[in-house]
Length: 513
Picture (cartoon, rainbow, N blue to C red):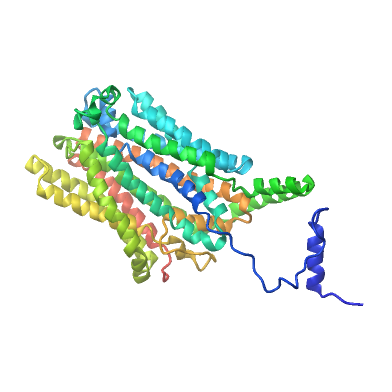
Protein backbone atom coordinates (compact mmCIF):
# COMPACT_ATOMS: atom_id res chain seq x y z
CA UNK A 1 0.00 0.00 0.00
CA UNK A 2 1.37 3.34 -1.05
CA UNK A 3 2.02 5.94 1.60
CA UNK A 4 1.60 9.68 1.31
CA UNK A 5 3.87 12.35 2.63
CA UNK A 6 2.64 14.99 5.10
CA UNK A 7 2.76 17.66 2.35
CA UNK A 8 0.60 15.54 0.06
CA UNK A 9 -1.92 14.83 2.84
CA UNK A 10 -2.08 18.58 3.64
CA UNK A 11 -2.68 19.45 0.00
CA UNK A 12 -5.50 16.91 -0.20
CA UNK A 13 -7.17 18.29 2.94
CA UNK A 14 -7.01 21.88 1.69
CA UNK A 15 -8.48 20.99 -1.66
CA UNK A 16 -11.25 18.90 -0.10
CA UNK A 17 -12.18 21.69 2.34
CA UNK A 18 -12.89 24.15 -0.46
CA UNK A 19 -14.21 21.68 -3.01
CA UNK A 20 -17.69 21.81 -4.46
CA UNK A 21 -19.66 19.40 -6.59
CA UNK A 22 -18.10 20.98 -9.66
CA UNK A 23 -14.46 20.95 -8.53
CA UNK A 24 -12.11 17.97 -8.41
CA UNK A 25 -11.18 16.61 -5.00
CA UNK A 26 -7.54 16.04 -5.89
CA UNK A 27 -5.04 18.14 -7.77
CA UNK A 28 -2.25 16.75 -9.91
CA UNK A 29 0.47 18.59 -8.03
CA UNK A 30 3.24 16.41 -9.41
CA UNK A 31 2.69 17.51 -12.99
CA UNK A 32 2.84 21.19 -12.12
CA UNK A 33 5.43 21.22 -9.36
CA UNK A 34 7.95 23.01 -11.57
CA UNK A 35 5.51 25.40 -13.23
CA UNK A 36 4.35 28.87 -12.13
CA UNK A 37 1.09 30.72 -12.77
CA UNK A 38 1.28 32.85 -15.87
CA UNK A 39 1.26 36.57 -15.14
CA UNK A 40 -1.77 38.45 -16.40
CA UNK A 41 -1.19 40.69 -19.40
CA UNK A 42 -0.72 44.36 -18.65
CA UNK A 43 -4.25 45.93 -18.50
CA UNK A 44 -3.36 48.95 -20.62
CA UNK A 45 -6.87 50.04 -21.59
CA UNK A 46 -8.26 49.69 -18.06
CA UNK A 47 -5.32 51.61 -16.62
CA UNK A 48 -5.81 54.36 -19.19
CA UNK A 49 -9.39 54.89 -18.03
CA UNK A 50 -8.35 54.98 -14.37
CA UNK A 51 -5.54 57.45 -15.04
CA UNK A 52 -7.96 59.68 -16.98
CA UNK A 53 -10.23 59.71 -13.93
CA UNK A 54 -7.23 60.66 -11.79
CA UNK A 55 -6.26 63.35 -14.31
CA UNK A 56 -9.61 65.06 -13.79
CA UNK A 57 -8.75 65.81 -10.14
CA UNK A 58 -5.75 68.15 -10.59
CA UNK A 59 -7.35 69.79 -13.63
CA UNK A 60 -10.74 70.56 -12.04
CA UNK A 61 -9.14 71.58 -8.74
CA UNK A 62 -6.39 73.74 -10.30
CA UNK A 63 -8.07 75.25 -13.36
CA UNK A 64 -9.61 78.02 -11.23
CA UNK A 65 -6.38 79.30 -9.70
CA UNK A 66 -5.40 81.74 -12.48
CA UNK A 67 -8.77 83.53 -12.32
CA UNK A 68 -10.41 82.69 -8.97
CA UNK A 69 -9.46 85.99 -7.34
CA UNK A 70 -10.90 88.00 -10.25
CA UNK A 71 -13.98 85.76 -10.21
CA UNK A 72 -14.54 86.39 -6.50
CA UNK A 73 -14.25 90.15 -7.00
CA UNK A 74 -16.68 89.96 -9.94
CA UNK A 75 -19.40 88.50 -7.69
CA UNK A 76 -19.37 91.73 -5.63
CA UNK A 77 -18.84 89.92 -2.33
CA UNK A 78 -15.82 92.10 -1.49
CA UNK A 79 -17.74 95.36 -2.10
CA UNK A 80 -14.78 96.70 -4.05
CA UNK A 81 -12.28 96.13 -1.23
CA UNK A 82 -9.40 94.26 -2.85
CA UNK A 83 -7.83 93.41 0.51
CA UNK A 84 -10.82 91.21 1.39
CA UNK A 85 -10.34 88.99 -1.64
CA UNK A 86 -8.10 86.60 0.26
CA UNK A 87 -10.78 85.72 2.81
CA UNK A 88 -13.34 84.71 0.22
CA UNK A 89 -10.90 83.12 -2.23
CA UNK A 90 -9.61 80.97 0.64
CA UNK A 91 -13.13 79.71 1.32
CA UNK A 92 -13.57 78.72 -2.32
CA UNK A 93 -10.23 76.95 -2.45
CA UNK A 94 -10.61 75.18 0.91
CA UNK A 95 -14.20 73.99 0.47
CA UNK A 96 -13.02 71.75 -2.37
CA UNK A 97 -10.59 69.87 -0.15
CA UNK A 98 -13.00 69.70 2.77
CA UNK A 99 -15.69 68.18 0.57
CA UNK A 100 -13.18 65.78 -0.98
CA UNK A 101 -11.76 64.80 2.41
CA UNK A 102 -15.08 64.11 4.13
CA UNK A 103 -16.40 62.07 1.19
CA UNK A 104 -13.25 60.06 0.45
CA UNK A 105 -14.00 57.41 3.07
CA UNK A 106 -17.71 57.07 2.15
CA UNK A 107 -16.68 56.59 -1.48
CA UNK A 108 -14.28 53.85 -0.41
CA UNK A 109 -16.83 52.13 1.83
CA UNK A 110 -19.35 52.27 -1.01
CA UNK A 111 -16.82 50.73 -3.39
CA UNK A 112 -16.11 47.94 -0.89
CA UNK A 113 -19.82 47.17 -0.66
CA UNK A 114 -21.19 47.55 -4.22
CA UNK A 115 -17.95 47.36 -6.21
CA UNK A 116 -15.46 49.82 -7.68
CA UNK A 117 -17.07 50.32 -11.08
CA UNK A 118 -20.23 52.22 -10.11
CA UNK A 119 -18.45 54.95 -8.07
CA UNK A 120 -15.80 55.28 -10.79
CA UNK A 121 -18.51 55.85 -13.42
CA UNK A 122 -20.69 58.21 -11.37
CA UNK A 123 -17.88 60.50 -10.22
CA UNK A 124 -16.70 61.93 -13.59
CA UNK A 125 -20.31 62.54 -14.69
CA UNK A 126 -21.08 64.50 -11.54
CA UNK A 127 -17.78 66.31 -11.84
CA UNK A 128 -18.61 67.45 -15.37
CA UNK A 129 -21.96 68.90 -14.25
CA UNK A 130 -20.70 70.81 -11.20
CA UNK A 131 -17.61 72.14 -13.01
CA UNK A 132 -19.79 73.60 -15.76
CA UNK A 133 -22.10 75.02 -13.09
CA UNK A 134 -19.13 76.69 -11.39
CA UNK A 135 -18.29 78.54 -14.60
CA UNK A 136 -21.76 80.05 -15.02
CA UNK A 137 -22.13 81.09 -11.37
CA UNK A 138 -22.98 84.71 -10.70
CA UNK A 139 -22.94 84.79 -6.89
CA UNK A 140 -20.44 83.83 -4.23
CA UNK A 141 -22.84 81.32 -2.66
CA UNK A 142 -23.21 79.43 -5.94
CA UNK A 143 -19.42 79.36 -6.31
CA UNK A 144 -19.19 77.71 -2.88
CA UNK A 145 -21.91 75.15 -3.69
CA UNK A 146 -20.46 74.09 -7.03
CA UNK A 147 -16.90 74.06 -5.68
CA UNK A 148 -18.06 71.76 -2.88
CA UNK A 149 -19.66 69.56 -5.54
CA UNK A 150 -16.31 69.33 -7.31
CA UNK A 151 -14.72 68.13 -4.09
CA UNK A 152 -17.45 65.55 -3.49
CA UNK A 153 -17.11 63.99 -6.93
CA UNK A 154 -13.32 64.10 -6.69
CA UNK A 155 -13.55 62.12 -3.47
CA UNK A 156 -13.35 58.92 -5.50
CA UNK A 157 -9.65 59.51 -6.22
CA UNK A 158 -8.90 57.05 -3.42
CA UNK A 159 -11.11 54.47 -5.11
CA UNK A 160 -9.13 54.94 -8.31
CA UNK A 161 -5.91 54.16 -6.45
CA UNK A 162 -7.47 51.01 -5.08
CA UNK A 163 -8.51 50.02 -8.61
CA UNK A 164 -4.90 50.36 -9.72
CA UNK A 165 -3.91 47.85 -7.06
CA UNK A 166 -6.77 45.54 -8.07
CA UNK A 167 -5.74 45.67 -11.72
CA UNK A 168 -2.02 45.16 -11.32
CA UNK A 169 -0.23 41.97 -10.43
CA UNK A 170 2.15 42.30 -7.45
CA UNK A 171 5.12 42.37 -9.84
CA UNK A 172 3.44 45.17 -11.84
CA UNK A 173 2.42 47.46 -8.98
CA UNK A 174 5.66 49.44 -8.75
CA UNK A 175 5.44 50.32 -12.43
CA UNK A 176 1.71 51.08 -12.33
CA UNK A 177 1.86 53.26 -9.21
CA UNK A 178 4.90 55.12 -10.52
CA UNK A 179 2.66 56.62 -13.21
CA UNK A 180 0.48 58.42 -10.65
CA UNK A 181 2.83 61.41 -10.15
CA UNK A 182 3.26 61.63 -13.92
CA UNK A 183 -0.50 61.93 -14.34
CA UNK A 184 -0.58 64.53 -11.55
CA UNK A 185 2.22 66.52 -13.20
CA UNK A 186 0.33 66.47 -16.49
CA UNK A 187 -2.74 67.79 -14.68
CA UNK A 188 -0.75 70.60 -13.05
CA UNK A 189 0.55 71.55 -16.50
CA UNK A 190 -2.87 71.56 -18.18
CA UNK A 191 -4.83 73.24 -15.35
CA UNK A 192 -3.12 76.68 -15.31
CA UNK A 193 -2.86 76.56 -19.09
CA UNK A 194 -6.61 76.05 -19.51
CA UNK A 195 -7.53 78.47 -16.74
CA UNK A 196 -5.17 81.22 -17.84
CA UNK A 197 -5.50 81.10 -21.61
CA UNK A 198 -9.26 80.57 -21.93
CA UNK A 199 -10.47 82.93 -19.18
CA UNK A 200 -12.29 86.05 -20.46
CA UNK A 201 -12.44 84.92 -24.13
CA UNK A 202 -14.58 87.94 -25.07
CA UNK A 203 -11.65 90.23 -24.23
CA UNK A 204 -8.99 88.02 -25.82
CA UNK A 205 -10.83 87.01 -29.02
CA UNK A 206 -13.60 89.63 -29.44
CA UNK A 207 -14.08 88.92 -33.16
CA UNK A 208 -14.41 85.14 -32.95
CA UNK A 209 -15.33 83.13 -29.89
CA UNK A 210 -15.96 86.35 -28.00
CA UNK A 211 -19.09 86.85 -30.11
CA UNK A 212 -20.83 84.00 -28.28
CA UNK A 213 -23.15 85.55 -25.73
CA UNK A 214 -22.65 82.98 -22.97
CA UNK A 215 -18.90 83.67 -22.95
CA UNK A 216 -19.51 87.40 -22.80
CA UNK A 217 -21.93 87.06 -19.88
CA UNK A 218 -19.78 84.48 -18.08
CA UNK A 219 -16.09 85.25 -18.74
CA UNK A 220 -14.83 82.23 -16.75
CA UNK A 221 -17.20 79.66 -18.21
CA UNK A 222 -14.97 78.53 -21.11
CA UNK A 223 -12.08 77.11 -19.03
CA UNK A 224 -14.60 75.37 -16.77
CA UNK A 225 -16.42 74.01 -19.83
CA UNK A 226 -13.20 72.57 -21.24
CA UNK A 227 -12.47 70.86 -17.93
CA UNK A 228 -16.05 69.59 -17.76
CA UNK A 229 -15.78 68.13 -21.27
CA UNK A 230 -12.70 66.15 -20.23
CA UNK A 231 -14.66 64.71 -17.31
CA UNK A 232 -17.60 63.95 -19.60
CA UNK A 233 -15.41 62.06 -22.08
CA UNK A 234 -13.91 60.15 -19.16
CA UNK A 235 -17.43 59.27 -17.98
CA UNK A 236 -18.34 57.69 -21.33
CA UNK A 237 -15.08 55.74 -21.44
CA UNK A 238 -15.65 54.46 -17.91
CA UNK A 239 -19.31 53.66 -18.51
CA UNK A 240 -18.63 51.52 -21.57
CA UNK A 241 -15.09 50.28 -20.94
CA UNK A 242 -14.27 50.02 -17.23
CA UNK A 243 -14.54 46.55 -15.70
CA UNK A 244 -15.30 45.61 -12.11
CA UNK A 245 -12.15 44.95 -10.06
CA UNK A 246 -13.43 44.44 -6.50
CA UNK A 247 -12.18 41.03 -5.30
CA UNK A 248 -15.32 40.56 -3.20
CA UNK A 249 -17.70 41.25 -6.07
CA UNK A 250 -15.69 39.13 -8.50
CA UNK A 251 -15.55 36.26 -6.02
CA UNK A 252 -19.30 36.39 -5.49
CA UNK A 253 -19.92 36.39 -9.24
CA UNK A 254 -17.61 33.43 -9.70
CA UNK A 255 -19.29 31.58 -6.85
CA UNK A 256 -22.71 32.20 -8.38
CA UNK A 257 -21.56 30.99 -11.78
CA UNK A 258 -20.13 27.80 -10.23
CA UNK A 259 -23.15 27.27 -8.01
CA UNK A 260 -21.08 27.48 -4.83
CA UNK A 261 -22.93 27.62 -1.52
CA UNK A 262 -23.29 31.05 0.08
CA UNK A 263 -22.22 29.67 3.47
CA UNK A 264 -18.55 29.71 2.63
CA UNK A 265 -18.81 33.28 1.41
CA UNK A 266 -20.39 34.47 4.65
CA UNK A 267 -17.54 32.97 6.68
CA UNK A 268 -14.94 34.55 4.40
CA UNK A 269 -16.65 37.97 4.62
CA UNK A 270 -16.64 37.80 8.43
CA UNK A 271 -12.94 36.97 8.38
CA UNK A 272 -12.30 39.83 5.96
CA UNK A 273 -14.07 42.29 8.27
CA UNK A 274 -11.90 41.24 11.21
CA UNK A 275 -8.79 41.39 9.04
CA UNK A 276 -9.63 44.90 7.87
CA UNK A 277 -9.94 46.16 11.44
CA UNK A 278 -6.70 44.49 12.43
CA UNK A 279 -4.86 45.87 9.41
CA UNK A 280 -5.93 49.43 10.15
CA UNK A 281 -4.70 49.20 13.73
CA UNK A 282 -1.52 47.44 12.71
CA UNK A 283 -0.36 50.22 10.37
CA UNK A 284 -0.60 52.86 13.10
CA UNK A 285 2.95 52.24 14.26
CA UNK A 286 5.70 54.80 14.64
CA UNK A 287 7.27 54.55 11.14
CA UNK A 288 3.93 54.94 9.40
CA UNK A 289 2.77 57.78 11.66
CA UNK A 290 6.04 59.58 11.06
CA UNK A 291 5.69 59.19 7.30
CA UNK A 292 2.10 60.43 7.50
CA UNK A 293 3.37 63.50 9.36
CA UNK A 294 5.88 64.16 6.57
CA UNK A 295 3.11 63.65 4.02
CA UNK A 296 0.85 66.12 5.85
CA UNK A 297 3.57 68.77 5.93
CA UNK A 298 4.15 68.18 2.23
CA UNK A 299 0.47 68.89 1.54
CA UNK A 300 0.59 71.98 3.76
CA UNK A 301 3.69 73.36 2.04
CA UNK A 302 2.49 72.80 -1.52
CA UNK A 303 -1.03 74.07 -0.84
CA UNK A 304 0.32 77.22 0.82
CA UNK A 305 2.24 77.96 -2.33
CA UNK A 306 -0.60 77.06 -4.70
CA UNK A 307 -3.07 79.30 -2.84
CA UNK A 308 -0.76 82.23 -2.14
CA UNK A 309 0.84 82.58 -5.55
CA UNK A 310 -2.25 83.52 -7.65
CA UNK A 311 -3.60 85.74 -4.86
CA UNK A 312 -0.38 87.67 -4.44
CA UNK A 313 0.26 87.89 -8.19
CA UNK A 314 -3.28 89.13 -8.96
CA UNK A 315 -3.31 91.76 -6.19
CA UNK A 316 -2.38 95.28 -7.23
CA UNK A 317 1.17 96.52 -6.66
CA UNK A 318 0.06 99.19 -4.16
CA UNK A 319 -1.60 96.44 -2.06
CA UNK A 320 1.44 94.18 -1.98
CA UNK A 321 0.97 92.18 -5.19
CA UNK A 322 2.10 92.27 -8.82
CA UNK A 323 -1.14 93.12 -10.63
CA UNK A 324 -1.04 90.13 -13.01
CA UNK A 325 -4.11 89.07 -14.98
CA UNK A 326 -5.30 85.45 -15.31
CA UNK A 327 -3.51 84.95 -18.64
CA UNK A 328 -0.12 85.96 -17.23
CA UNK A 329 -0.54 83.78 -14.14
CA UNK A 330 -1.60 80.77 -16.19
CA UNK A 331 1.12 81.19 -18.80
CA UNK A 332 3.92 81.58 -16.26
CA UNK A 333 2.91 78.44 -14.40
CA UNK A 334 2.44 76.45 -17.59
CA UNK A 335 5.86 77.40 -18.94
CA UNK A 336 7.58 76.18 -15.79
CA UNK A 337 5.36 73.11 -15.33
CA UNK A 338 6.92 71.53 -18.43
CA UNK A 339 10.53 71.54 -17.14
CA UNK A 340 9.13 70.41 -13.80
CA UNK A 341 7.86 67.18 -15.37
CA UNK A 342 11.03 66.75 -17.46
CA UNK A 343 13.26 67.24 -14.42
CA UNK A 344 11.36 64.62 -12.46
CA UNK A 345 11.56 62.12 -15.31
CA UNK A 346 15.25 62.58 -16.14
CA UNK A 347 17.06 63.46 -12.93
CA UNK A 348 14.98 62.30 -9.98
CA UNK A 349 16.22 58.73 -9.61
CA UNK A 350 19.86 59.80 -10.06
CA UNK A 351 19.53 62.49 -7.38
CA UNK A 352 17.95 60.07 -4.90
CA UNK A 353 20.63 57.45 -5.47
CA UNK A 354 23.40 60.04 -5.14
CA UNK A 355 22.20 61.86 -2.00
CA UNK A 356 19.67 59.49 -0.44
CA UNK A 357 15.94 59.91 0.25
CA UNK A 358 16.39 61.73 3.56
CA UNK A 359 18.68 64.41 2.10
CA UNK A 360 16.27 64.90 -0.81
CA UNK A 361 13.30 65.28 1.52
CA UNK A 362 15.02 67.74 3.86
CA UNK A 363 16.28 69.77 0.88
CA UNK A 364 12.81 70.02 -0.58
CA UNK A 365 11.25 71.23 2.66
CA UNK A 366 14.03 73.80 2.88
CA UNK A 367 13.05 74.81 -0.65
CA UNK A 368 9.51 75.48 0.55
CA UNK A 369 10.91 78.08 2.98
CA UNK A 370 12.66 79.81 0.08
CA UNK A 371 9.49 79.72 -2.03
CA UNK A 372 7.55 81.63 0.63
CA UNK A 373 10.35 84.13 1.35
CA UNK A 374 10.62 85.14 -2.31
CA UNK A 375 7.08 86.60 -2.29
CA UNK A 376 7.94 89.69 -0.16
CA UNK A 377 11.03 90.24 -2.29
CA UNK A 378 8.87 90.37 -5.41
CA UNK A 379 6.54 92.85 -3.72
CA UNK A 380 9.45 95.02 -2.57
CA UNK A 381 10.95 95.33 -6.07
CA UNK A 382 7.52 95.96 -7.64
CA UNK A 383 6.71 98.76 -5.20
CA UNK A 384 10.16 100.26 -5.62
CA UNK A 385 9.84 100.53 -9.40
CA UNK A 386 6.06 100.91 -9.58
CA UNK A 387 5.86 98.08 -12.10
CA UNK A 388 6.94 94.51 -12.76
CA UNK A 389 10.44 95.12 -14.13
CA UNK A 390 13.38 92.78 -14.83
CA UNK A 391 14.23 92.53 -11.13
CA UNK A 392 10.76 91.26 -10.28
CA UNK A 393 10.83 88.80 -13.17
CA UNK A 394 14.25 87.58 -12.03
CA UNK A 395 12.86 86.75 -8.60
CA UNK A 396 9.83 85.08 -10.22
CA UNK A 397 12.10 82.90 -12.37
CA UNK A 398 14.13 81.90 -9.30
CA UNK A 399 10.93 81.07 -7.44
CA UNK A 400 9.49 78.96 -10.25
CA UNK A 401 12.83 77.19 -10.71
CA UNK A 402 12.89 76.45 -6.98
CA UNK A 403 9.35 75.07 -7.20
CA UNK A 404 10.52 72.71 -9.94
CA UNK A 405 13.17 71.24 -7.64
CA UNK A 406 10.71 71.33 -4.72
CA UNK A 407 8.04 69.23 -6.45
CA UNK A 408 10.55 66.95 -8.14
CA UNK A 409 12.27 66.16 -4.88
CA UNK A 410 9.01 65.06 -3.33
CA UNK A 411 8.79 62.44 -6.01
CA UNK A 412 11.46 60.66 -3.98
CA UNK A 413 10.56 57.24 -2.67
CA UNK A 414 9.95 58.28 0.92
CA UNK A 415 8.83 54.75 1.50
CA UNK A 416 12.40 53.53 1.15
CA UNK A 417 13.19 55.40 4.36
CA UNK A 418 11.36 52.60 6.12
CA UNK A 419 12.39 49.73 3.88
CA UNK A 420 14.18 48.08 6.81
CA UNK A 421 10.80 47.70 8.53
CA UNK A 422 8.67 46.81 5.52
CA UNK A 423 9.34 44.36 2.71
CA UNK A 424 7.91 46.38 -0.13
CA UNK A 425 8.71 47.30 -3.68
CA UNK A 426 10.03 50.75 -4.43
CA UNK A 427 10.20 52.72 -7.63
CA UNK A 428 12.64 55.34 -8.80
CA UNK A 429 9.72 57.66 -9.43
CA UNK A 430 7.18 57.87 -6.62
CA UNK A 431 5.27 60.70 -5.00
CA UNK A 432 4.45 60.63 -1.28
CA UNK A 433 0.96 59.52 -2.23
CA UNK A 434 2.33 56.67 -4.27
CA UNK A 435 4.67 55.71 -1.44
CA UNK A 436 1.83 55.51 1.05
CA UNK A 437 0.07 53.17 -1.36
CA UNK A 438 2.80 50.63 -0.77
CA UNK A 439 2.31 50.90 3.01
CA UNK A 440 -1.37 50.17 2.46
CA UNK A 441 -0.52 47.17 0.30
CA UNK A 442 1.89 45.76 2.85
CA UNK A 443 -0.35 46.43 5.86
CA UNK A 444 -3.53 45.09 4.31
CA UNK A 445 -4.18 41.44 5.23
CA UNK A 446 -6.54 41.00 2.28
CA UNK A 447 -7.47 42.87 -0.90
CA UNK A 448 -10.94 43.75 0.43
CA UNK A 449 -9.57 46.01 3.17
CA UNK A 450 -7.52 48.10 0.75
CA UNK A 451 -10.42 50.41 -0.01
CA UNK A 452 -11.08 51.36 3.61
CA UNK A 453 -7.40 51.84 4.44
CA UNK A 454 -6.78 53.97 1.38
CA UNK A 455 -9.91 56.00 2.15
CA UNK A 456 -8.64 56.83 5.64
CA UNK A 457 -5.24 57.86 4.31
CA UNK A 458 -6.84 59.92 1.58
CA UNK A 459 -9.11 61.63 4.11
CA UNK A 460 -6.22 62.72 6.32
CA UNK A 461 -4.25 64.19 3.44
CA UNK A 462 -7.18 66.00 1.87
CA UNK A 463 -8.36 67.55 5.15
CA UNK A 464 -4.88 69.02 5.61
CA UNK A 465 -5.08 70.42 2.08
CA UNK A 466 -8.43 71.93 3.01
CA UNK A 467 -7.02 73.84 5.96
CA UNK A 468 -4.03 75.32 4.16
CA UNK A 469 -5.64 77.53 1.44
CA UNK A 470 -7.99 79.37 3.80
CA UNK A 471 -5.19 79.83 6.30
CA UNK A 472 -2.75 81.20 3.73
CA UNK A 473 -5.17 83.54 1.94
CA UNK A 474 -6.80 84.78 5.15
CA UNK A 475 -3.39 85.55 6.64
CA UNK A 476 -2.55 87.46 3.46
CA UNK A 477 -5.71 89.57 3.76
CA UNK A 478 -5.25 90.07 7.52
CA UNK A 479 -1.61 91.13 7.13
CA UNK A 480 -2.38 93.78 4.53
CA UNK A 481 -5.57 95.06 6.14
CA UNK A 482 -3.75 95.68 9.41
CA UNK A 483 -0.35 96.44 7.84
CA UNK A 484 1.45 93.97 10.13
CA UNK A 485 5.17 93.88 9.30
CA UNK A 486 4.38 95.97 6.26
CA UNK A 487 1.95 93.29 5.05
CA UNK A 488 4.61 90.59 5.34
CA UNK A 489 3.27 88.91 8.47
CA UNK A 490 1.72 86.16 6.35
CA UNK A 491 5.08 85.20 4.90
CA UNK A 492 6.74 85.10 8.34
CA UNK A 493 4.09 82.72 9.71
CA UNK A 494 4.12 80.41 6.70
CA UNK A 495 7.92 80.33 6.55
CA UNK A 496 7.97 79.35 10.24
CA UNK A 497 5.61 76.44 9.55
CA UNK A 498 7.83 75.32 6.70
CA UNK A 499 10.83 75.41 9.07
CA UNK A 500 8.93 73.07 11.38
CA UNK A 501 8.47 70.80 8.38
CA UNK A 502 12.24 70.85 7.81
CA UNK A 503 12.75 69.73 11.42
CA UNK A 504 10.22 66.89 11.09
CA UNK A 505 11.90 65.66 7.91
CA UNK A 506 15.31 65.73 9.61
CA UNK A 507 14.03 63.13 12.08
CA UNK A 508 13.74 60.58 9.29
CA UNK A 509 16.33 57.79 9.53
CA UNK A 510 19.27 58.11 7.17
CA UNK A 511 19.64 55.16 4.83
CA UNK A 512 20.84 54.58 1.29
CA UNK A 513 18.32 54.68 -1.52
